[in-house]
Amino acid sequence: MTEKVAVSRAAFIQYPFGRQLGEVGDREGQRKVTGAMADLLVSAESPNTYVHLPYEWPEPPEKTKWRPDIPAPGRLKRMREEEEEARKAAAK
Amino acid sequence: MPITKVDSHYFHDQKERIENQRPNDPAETPWTPLPKPLSECNVTLVSTAGIFAKGDESFDYDRERAEPSWGDPSHREIPSSAGQDDVEYSHLHIDTSFLAKDRNVAWPVDIFEDYAREGKIGRLAETLYSIMGYIPNYNPLIKRTAPLMIESMKAQGVDTAFIIPV
Image (cartoon, chains in turn yellow, orange):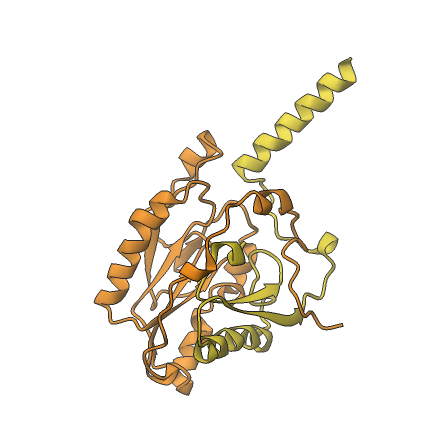
């Protein structure tokens, strides 16, 4: 998404939504990420400079919580529409 | 094996949504060199986590609940002196409980205060900024909100901003 928007500089990381810098209480890990951001700010010499950070999230996606307990309005709407479609399909 | 290319769809498959986005022309990407050593820079932070100071106006979630394809495009200014529990972390599309326990998971105020003490940055600006990152129609964000944030940053002599999207 960010590459499509095209920005001056960006550091990409494969961490879950809402915890882009690291786990709760992991200050050392969080500082590695913010440090990489700062390094990029200093070292980039032209626009569209992107780095992919090597850090791996310790949990697999299916065990990683990032969605809120109460679904967002758009998601709730989609879930209700899907339920309705399933109900109609079952009734046929 | 260490990651060499980040998979944007690893935690949430948004392939269709992203592929339908019209790309900007990279040749037109703006560029502002860092004006001075980072150790001399006045630095601010920008979050998309829907953060606002307690007592300040919330982002408009009533309208989003009524119109799920609409998201509040405005911004909030947060004093950098505000502590962990002096703000609300309000984005409806992510689990904000992690931010509520330790803001540095995506709002690294304590880390940048440490950087200022350590001399890595000049100082952390008096004002930090947040938008709420679910903004399907982003034109008001570009045309109205971003200029307001930039005006505020310039008034405070900010040299550079770190944006931490969630």
